[in-house]
Each structure stands twice: as C-alpha cells, then as structure tokens.
Length: 619
Image (cartoon, rainbow, N blue to C red; front, side, top):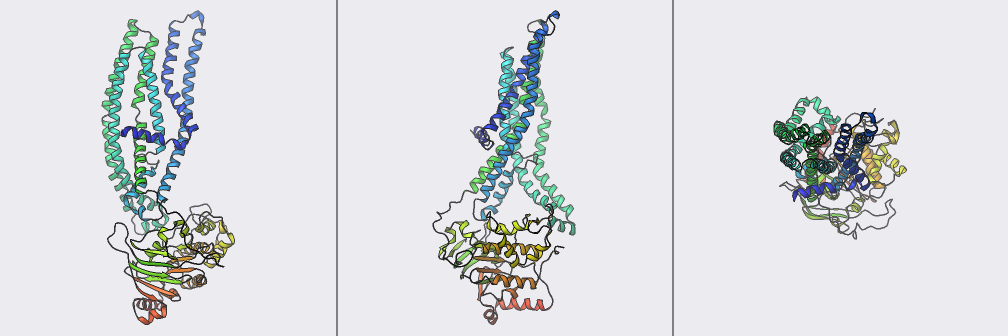
C-alpha cells in the first residue's frame, strides 16, 4: 500500500507540467524504450537477408531492412535529443510549482510563532530540495524518473516478447534473475533514504555557516576575529556528521557490486551460451542469435540503471516532508471579514481616525519558553497620542509591538481596537492601519524607490508621496548623492548598486513607514528607529514625525530618553510589567526607574559619550 501511495504521489506531481508537455515527454520516453527491441528485430532481419543474399542481386534485397535498421538508430538519437530538453522543462515547471506551494504554506499563517519551531525549520529545509546538492532530489526529478521507470517497464516487456520467440523458458529465467536484482536494489535504496534524512538535518546546520562565509556583514567579523578557519571546520563537521552514514552506505553498495555482477552473469551466460551453441548446431540462425544477444543485454541494462530509483526515492521523501509540513502548518481559519477596525470619516489623508487601542491584562510567553515576557499588561493607546515605551533590555518592549502588529497572539488577555479584538479581525485589514519600523529591519536589495514604496505592498507607487516621505525621514540628502537617484539599487551586489551605512538605511526604513502613514496607516510604530543617527539628525526627524500627532497614533521605542521626553505619555516597562506611566516631568518628579535612567544618560551625554551605531557614510 505504501508503495502504491508513493507512486501515486509522483504521478500527481506531474500535474503542474501540463498534459501537452507531459504527453510529449511520455511519447518520447516510450518510443526510446521500444527502440532496443525494434533495433534488435531490424538487425536480425538484416542479418537474415545477408545470410540468404545472392551476390548477383546486389544491395536490392538488403535495402529495406538496412533502411529500417538505420531508421531505428536515427529515431534513437532523435528521442535522446528530445528527452533531455523535455525533461528539463518538465522539471522546471514541477519544481517551480512545488517551491511556490512551499512558500504559500509557510506564509499562510498570520503570525511568526509556528514558523519558529525547529521541526518546521527542518522540514522547510528538506522540502526545498536543493538540486545543487547531489544527495537531494526534487519532485521534478522523481516525477520524470518515474516516467523513465514506466517507459523502462514497457521496454522490458517488448524485449521479453522478442526473447520469447526464441525461448519462453529463457524469458522466465532471466526475469527471475532481474527481479532478484531489483529487489536487492530497492532494499539498498530504502536504507539510503534513512541516511538522507540525517544528512538533511546536518546540512541545515552547515548552511548557516556557508551563508555566513559569503555574507559581507558576517565576513567582517569572521576576518577580524580570525574565525574563518574555525567556521570552515564547523561546516566540515556538519557535512561529515550528516553525510558519513550516507557515504558509508554508498561504499557498502559499491562493495556489494559483485552480487549484482554475479546475478547478471547468471542471467546472460545461459542465454548467450545456449543461443550460440544453437547457431553452431544449426538449431537456430545467426539472425536469431543476434536478436537474443542484443535483447538480453538490453533487458539487464534496463534493470541495472538505479539512477531513476534514487530520484524516485529522494523525491518521495521530499513530498512526504511537504505533507508533514502542511500538517504542522495548516491553513488558518480566518473569521468572516464582517468586523474590521471601526473607522470614522476624517479629513486626514487616509480618510479615517486612528483607533483607540487597548491591551487588556495581556501576558505572553514564547513557544518552548517557561518565562513570561509580558505579565498582566494593561495599557491604552489613545487616538492621536504620542506614546513612548522605555525600559532596560529584555523588558518586553519589542514583544509588545509584535503583539500589536498581530505577529503573535497573547498567551492571556486580549488587544482591542475601538473595542474589537484584533485577533478576530482580518489580519491584512488590521495591518493596513499600521506603519511599523522594527529594530531588526530588512535591507532589501531593491531600488531606493522600491525600498520606500513597498510599505503598501503591490500598490502602484505615489511618487510624490514617496518623495515627501523621504524628505520627512531625512533621506532626501542621501538620495541626492545616489548615482541614479530613486532607481539606484541599494546593494553593491546589484549592477550600479551602492551600499548604505546603518544610519542611511534607517532613514530609508523611516521613509518607508512615513509613506505608509501618508497612504492611510493611522498607527505609526517606531522600534529604535534612530539608533544609527546622530542626536541632531534624530531631533530633526522626530520633530517632523511628531507633527503627525493628532491624526496618527505614534508609538516610539527608543533608548535615548532625551528624545522621548516630549512624548504625551511615557510608559516604563520593567521585567514584562508596566512599572511607571506618565509625562516626562511627572516621572522625573517621582524619582523612580525612569528618573534614574534619564539622569544616567544625561551624565553620559555631558561626558561626550556618543551612543550612535554607525558603519561609515555613503561617499
């Protein structure tokens, strides 16, 4: 039953290739499979004519069988020439569809928590089936391999039909031998699949260091700290740990090759000796001997080739891992979008007022952890308010923002917008109201225009809005120095591209968020958005962003307390709880945690300490 399920899975994998392409490939493969029998018959025909040829008749009697034999050879070359590109195109369609489906499964969820599980990461690595790795086979490899295998069965039947004309007993004997041979091969490959699973897992660890070795950012550390050799050793360690069982089993298969050789001899020797003796005694003709010799070898060649079996076994494993991934990441049942964020008309660019957001006794714990990052958080964000979140590292500030963005759901409590639980809303509709700058923002290798404009997904760019956002984020000055302006790729790996410094990238990301706000977002969230900027630039940027106060709710996380002092309200988080909340002057008067933190920073600033993180400005 398992065998049939695996075969049917490979048949279903052909669907993305389409019926016309699959049909042409099947025709070419089956034609190629029939050619050994056809070649043997035409060759025997030609030999028979030669045996009985009359020298006076010339080439006349030989012309037809000779042309048929030449046609068989020509068709063989043509089918070989057709099969390769047809297989390549078929694999490309199947593998492209497979990778698209993997991406859809991975992106189907609205949050990140389920993607962070180790077993999910392992399965994603397995189903990617990198064709550059010799131990991995893709669904396209398996599907076309099965077509080759089926065509080979047809070829074997045709060869057996030719052999049966000589001796049914010989056919039965040779089939018994080849079945034993195939059984041996299947057992070896089944064991090989188990070794492949271990190899996949270790290759995942090795890939981390491979990517680091060629990454410009990680490359600096590896060279400065002198860990290049150590990193190579780590890669080699994981490769050996994963592949040593695989290599050992392959060596074992090679060493057991004498069994295969002995089985082939057991099948071929009786056929060759019997037909040759028959030809000598006159019991059969040389033409019959020629046909038997050719078809016997073709039969064993068809069974001796295990490449397709390897491909099928590897692809079945990939498809099985994909099904397991689908089980672990099922489609999210979203509620009917009848209740979205309540909106009211307004004169603001987005046409809606910012919602009143409330955290109601929210607690959160990351999957696999035993510690609550947030505990009983009760917080309200008033429409149009500028709220600052401050606290020591690990206090839960960034986690609070991820919950607000719907990337995670609270372990306890709920988050509401105008009284509606955001967990019950359509995630895409809710996120249209948000413009977020995360602390670990992504540096996309796209043009400057695309980097800013992608905050609104695939919507057409409002160039005037993008330019205004760049000005408000302080990016306009950098833009003037880019060689191709807005069309300049922001990656040196791209043609005519440039690398930006950390501060310049932060201005790009700020412009991205401001553009999203100008396109309708009514909650602007900034998680350490100016850590790479100097104090003067930071002050100018926040002066422009603060102007949106009233029409947009601004949530700011910053380690620089001199910036947040002008917020309407400052919320101090300490060990996952709200320790203090109020305006700057009120908190300073209390003399609590915020006042202590502010005084320490003020003393460091007066001493000339610059806490900016910089990487070198664009020349």
